[in-house]
Length: 97
Image (tube, rainbow, N blue to C red; front, side, top):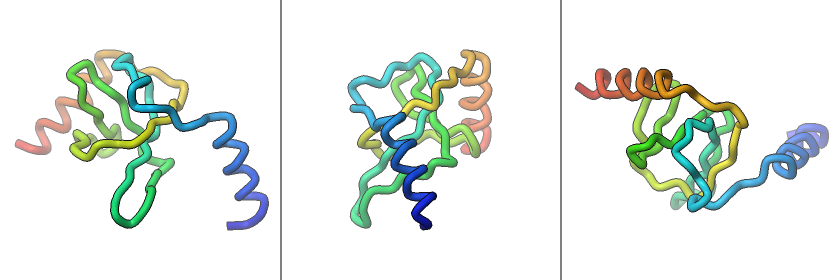
C-alpha cells in the first residue's frame, strides 16, 4: 500500500467510522461489516450488506444470508427499497433450495 493509498484509507475511516452493532437498524441502509475471526479482522470494502426486518444480515452480491456475527458496521449512506431487499432475499432462498 502506498502512502497516498494509506492516507486515503485513513481519511475514509475518519469520515465513516465503524459503529456498534446495537446502533444498526433494519431500514434498508447498505453497509460494510467488520468480522473478527482467528486470523484477525477482515473488512471487504467491496462487499455490501443490509439488515433486514427479520433481524438477519444479507450480502447483496452474490445474495447470501450472513450466519457469522459481525463485530461492527459502517454505513454506505444509500438505502434499499423494501422491494429490492425482498428480491435479494428471494434470490438467496432460490440458490439454497
